[in-house]
Length: 361
Image (cartoon, rainbow, N blue to C red):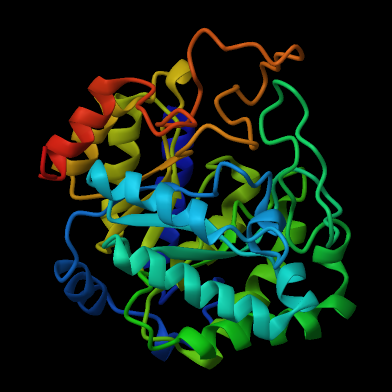
């Protein structure tokens, strides 16, 4: 961890020198200042939520395609979230669902936002993603594989599509259309442009699309802040990390470490002076839990968004690297808060969330 923190410190010191020398900043005049970012953050309640996908969807396409979009399930599950005090959700979109039906896709996004508003939840949306299966396809999605974490989750735009510049015009249309449609929508918290850029062995080869995505977003210049989360502190990610830090209006990050190491990460990221949004944490078998970490995030005034909400087709109650091919019950759930019927996996966790968010008991 010391090496990881040192790498991040070096990246930070580089960013403060010579007006971000050697770091590409997209339209510097539009990047939010620390003052603007903190003024925006002061207007928000303490934000707590989860990475959300309905229990009946195996991936982003199954969530958003017309044939499988399930408004009833979303309404029910966001009602459960409201009931335990959650007020935000991180939600992945998918470019292929848009490409197949642009008007219908936007209608469904609007419907989702109406449901979320009903439950006093202000979501953030994610555009692109370098994680899990490489080749997404529209239509019927694969069945889940028993006991395997996120067996059907799809990258966006996929591999090799992410590095083929011939795909960029269509992706630009997608990003700009969604941003323009919802640029002034007060129901949206922020835009998370790219989940874990460089994952799946891509590393710096994801930088061109990341740069393009920030460029497209700055050209639209939505009212909501834009960001792309830090997630890997190794030296080979320095270029990506510096770009993300320099171009994000608020700083988002992932941390599945224990609370002591998580706190160190927060202390370093506070060096940049902007609000902090933890968009992924909570993996029980890695000693990142609600009980030991959520109080730290509240004390540090960091947005707290864990991975997983309702046990369902994504299978993320199983650990990344510990499949159970018989689909049996893991001894300790990796992610997820609620069972399929809406009851807590651990009541002490939902009680804590309610307590820290001052939700009605």
